[in-house]
Image (cartoon, rainbow, N blue to C red):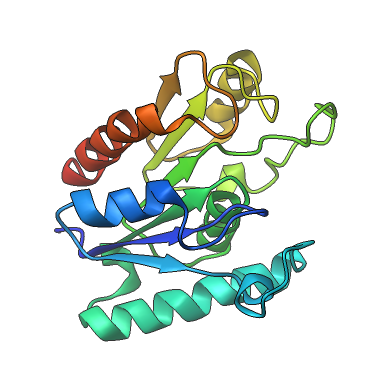
Length: 187
């Protein structure tokens, strides 16, 4: 089955026009839909809405995108940066169909609070999942991520950006897009 499109959701402080999302839309050879969560669409900078409202927004965007492309959700790859990728993964764990997940700078835990892991839903992720993180990300070290990944039953690919933190520098955009493109092509 060919992937029909990629849905990207922004991080807590970002929006649909993040430079990486725009570059992915320009460079990847498939339709890309960049979404704003409701609080951002309403012009609020933050804090983000609660999880259930964010998940509903992803479900709505997937419904719109699948109707536009005339395909089932199982032909879409879902994901995004930080909170956006996390919310997409939670929606998939709750039963939303997807060809795969692209999680950019996944926030494994809040900064300085490694005991508050955001992994309860990992055991319900059967879709192929790609993590792309900076190896100096304060939201999850390589050791912490490596420790939690085995709880995901589906296939997992992990790509580390050397020397990068939670918001990788623009010069890493090309590397990220190439890794995402290979992942999607391999589905």
